[in-house]
Length: 178
Image: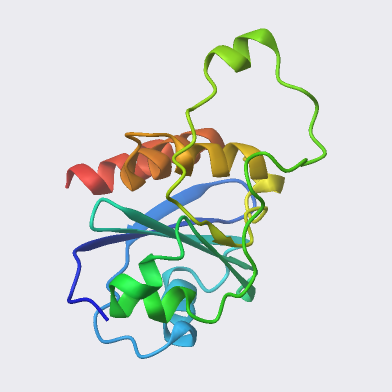
């Protein structure tokens, strides 16, 4: 397993109407349950808790808890588990590959404007986990996978785009600039 990689972990939590964000320290975590506990500790009463973990400008993992329960995990690339202890901790237990970009998602066909902005898929990534974990927040499976596969798109860019779309972009950006 590879050596330590740099990471940025930020939680976005929502009560009934308002998003807030805070950085999360994952040093010393021993397993996925401890990561989930640190996410719960951000706001015990949050309706939705998201944790975005960007690693080494190459990998993104997103964790979601609804009302502190039912942990769901998505990883932008299964290789993350091979590259670092943190990646292995987050993604090793995930056996479900995410839908491929060319698989049907049940969404309506893209409009001409959407097609102009469609990313070029990066064939070397292997997303895993629950790519639909943000669908009820307005980020479809296809959009999440397309963002992760877009050539030149860094994990920080994906996080920023997702957070802007769900309504917590400013809060995340403030933390990143601090």
